[in-house]
Each structure stands twice: as C-alpha cells, then as structure tokens.
Length: 397
Image 1 (cartoon, rainbow, N blue to C red):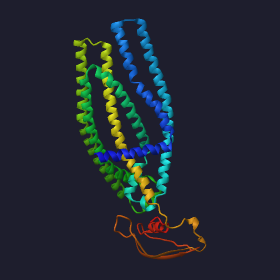
Image 2 (spheres, one colour):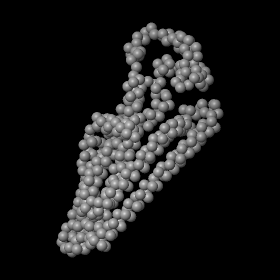
Image 3 (cartoon, helix red, strand yellow):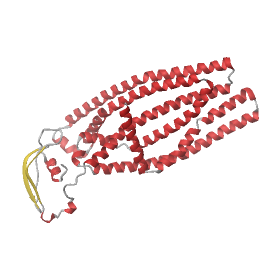
Image 4 (tube, rainbow, N blue to C red):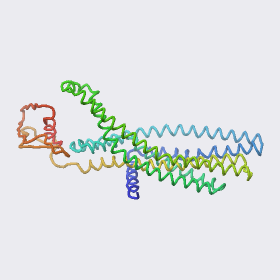
C-alpha cells in the first residue's frame, strides 16, 4: 500500500508541475476561490445561531434585523464573488486543457509508428487523451485544502460541546478510508478491462458509420461479420460493467450505514443537551450545522484524496506515454530533406516481416528494386501485405 501511494503521489506531483508549467494562471485563479470556499460555510453557522438566539432569548428586534441583513448581504456577496471567480477559473481551465491536449498530440506524433500501432500503447494513449483529468487533479487539490481548513475551524466548535462526537466522526472517517481503498482497487481492476473493449467498439462503429469502408464491406459481404463482432464486444462490455457496478455498490453499503448511525448519534447527543442541559435553540442549530458540515467536509476530503489517488492512475498513463516517446526516439536514418533524391534507389533484399506479439509472417522473402523515376504497382487480396510493405518503405518499422 505504501509503495502504491508513493507511486500515485509521485505521478500527481508530476502532473501538478506539468500543469503549472503549461499554464500558471490556472493556479493563481484558484487561490481566491479556495479562500472564498473556506469562508462560506461559516457564514450561515454564525448568523443563524445569532438570529435564533435573538428570537428565543434576546428578543431585540433591531439586533435581529441587523443579523438578518448581514446574513443576506454576506451570502449575496459570497455568491457574486463565487460566480465571478468561477468564470475566470473555467476560462483558464479551457486554456490549460487545450494546451495539454496539444502537447500530448505532439508527443504521440513523435513516437515511432511501430510503437503507436501496439494495442497496449493505444490503450495508454486513449486513457491519457482525456484532458479533463489534468484539471481534476487541480480541483481535487483545491478541494482538499478547502475541506482541511474548514475541518480545523469546525473541529474547534464541535470539541467545545462533546469531544465524543469528534471521536465518533473520526472513527466513521477511518472506516470510509478503508472502503475507499477497496473502491480504488476495483477501479484499478476495471480500467484494463474497460479500455480495450471501448477501443474495439470505436473501431467497429467507425467501420459501420464511415462511407469510405462501405465498398469493401459490400464487396466482401462483411456486414454480418461486423455486426457479430460489434454485438459480442457490446455484450462483453455490458457484462463487465454490470459486474463492476455490483462490486462498487456492495462496497458502498457499509459506509452508508455508518453515515446513518453517525447522524443518529449526533442528534441524540444534542437533543439530550437541549432537554437536560439547557442548550439554547440557536446553539443547537449551530452545533447541528457544524457537525453536519464537519462530517460532509471530512467525507469530502476523504473523497478528494481518494479521487486524487485514483487520478494518479490516469497520470500514470500520461507519464508512460511521455516516457515511451523519450525512450523510443531514434537517431538512426536521415530525414527525407537531408537525402539527395537525384539518384535514389529503394531496394528490398529477401525481406521477411511479422508484427510484434505474433508469429504470423505478413511478408516472406520479398525482393524488389525501385529506381528513381520508376513506377511500381502493388496488387493483392486483403491481408496480402500491401500496407505492411509501404510501412516498411516509410521506415515505420
């Protein structure tokens, strides 16, 4: 577990540095938003307590109206500032996603074609292409900071009434951490099953929907074959998805029960304080809201950390693409622009070729010579190796 967390945290740290290098403005626009999100939960907690206590105990109309006006105006200002900040954050988010996607595209374009054609690498590229995951890391990080600061303030309020409530909520959170770890393992198990099936589905649907493939589908009577392949792939996906969702739901049953027990215990303790210890209605409202907000904030920070760790799985794919591109850069050969094409000769001498991870030879003992200003037509049935021959001529392999 420690090794897994270290790897995920390392990947997330890598992505944060990468996003900061890509667009620093996204971080500077998030700081005021974080501060505002920390302040906003305490506004109703404080003012509702003052209002209720004034209604039931103080009964000062002028003071009551002042509290109501302050609550309404502060809520309005916070919402207005939140809307303005959200606009700037979303704008910077779109810019960052676009830059990251462009960078990933450049990385893939610089990878050797033979690597890009490998199914495993295609799966990694497909998972790395979702640029929104980059911003999820930033959102999750800001959520962790916001929830942590909120928890610190609310914990001070809760401990003043009943430390046992704080202990009880902490135990529920620890239990939630355990179940979140299990959920993360289920998602990690699901990803290598999900991606190849989706990639195949996209391939089959592209064949069925694109006019360019219509001629070969009709000429070779492939419509039933494509339908059967698509149908089988769809059934595989549904079966895998159902099993995955059942496992997730089963894992979420106990945390839901724990949350219900937590809320019941808190209300019983506070009700006892009101009936037997003389707690005011305003204090009761403040404490119940504080406990509820504290519980939500703790679960939010647990969820944000869990999602942060889970996003690290995506980052691993993105980082893998970059590492493959760096490792597979080739220095042999020359660019076409560096070659004197005046007297060039292309020659294959007894060439045989099979693709990686297969033992079937696509080409065997092929020899040909093509001189400058000569034309050569290559004909053959589907699968005879025409495209493979061109790939070898282009040094894709």
